[in-house]
Image (tube, rainbow, N blue to C red; front, top):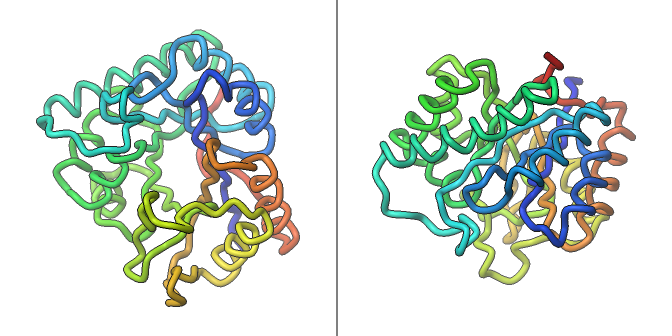
Length: 255
């Protein structure tokens, strides 16, 4: 079977930076917050250095310019503004990576921007434009089967489709809103079992028992999920126990 990637969103809280640095040693791709919803030059540099030391793929995690709301609410800003903010955020991480002899291997939008790009082709397009301008060799991460992922692929970008090991799904394949009970999965064994099913059989069960076809190229564990390290370890062990290699499908080669 094809290798599968294990990614985490990191650099999103100064109080959690040490835990994030440790988490990078377990996952194979790190999506580094680059100033939109969280993150600064110091956190980016520390995470890039650890990625280089561990061989973890370096990725940008741009968002709406919404530090107060952690990038989790949609913003009524124009497409040109989205382009500017995404390009600036990705470029800030790319400069730090380059200064340390590395490159940005992938880009994964954060929060509300992730969902907007997944469902609205015009948002997916401006993200593609920004990424192709700043880091044209980088791959894009987006939700399995989403219009946005299809659009990026049609634009000629490498695309890796994603599922979440630590989030519940609705019957239509969308994520259960965080405001709903049970939206976040904190039990490592349960997260690992779901990841095993996704990797082995290409399906995930919604919270009301509907089997949804999803065959991800990458699985995400959020660094702010309680027990994130234990969840990531359990997910990785479950996948490797099937004889499937856990590895990033995109490289962050050293310059």
